[in-house]
Length: 262
Image (cartoon, rainbow, N blue to C red; front, side, top):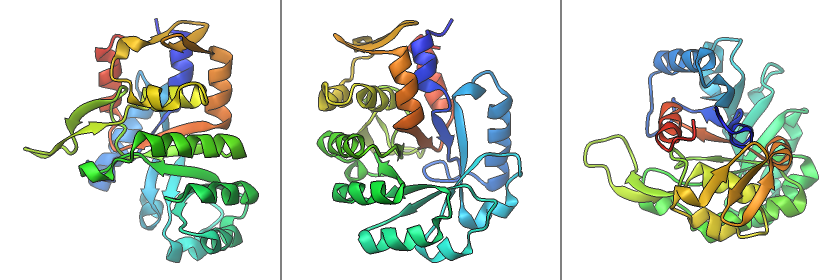
């Protein structure tokens, strides 16, 4: 049986982004996968279907979507789209997004942590890119930790994307191609436990590579001597650390099962 704290940590955690690299699946296969996952044993860990704006009309209406929108597409949004992901480089970009937000849930990806205060003023959420297809696409843990602290300080919820296929930080191939480069990938358990224990040992938790350093029971989730209650985890997941996008749903689940956590 899954520990209650672990189930709380994982519930609706993985937004399925099978259309995006490195999977880059054809649309029909990504749709079939998501439909199977939402009916499967681990449907409770599944979040939204991530789709580029140009393909929205092709997605089954019953799928909960998170729509990736470019700047030049913002004016084309209609009322059926309630959650978007976009980018901003400066305050002017934020103002432009605010002009079309219309009460939607808006995640804004930015490389500038100083814009987090601006996100708060508009009621936007933040998005951080935690990896990619090359080693240099993975930010330093210090940058990730600073981002989370900035978000916590401004009460800005966030999601993450890219490079989080595995629960615990580890060295793995960065793509699914033969002879893919090997790189150190961030762990999604590391990230969301660091968010739950923000201010305690952020960078050390993000750097942890030993799964035995984490433990879960019905009342607490712990990293070494630092613990978060299940009730705190539920609040953190609802109000602060929302989800992460992954082009694979099966890989994270398989890794969790291999660890004996599922």
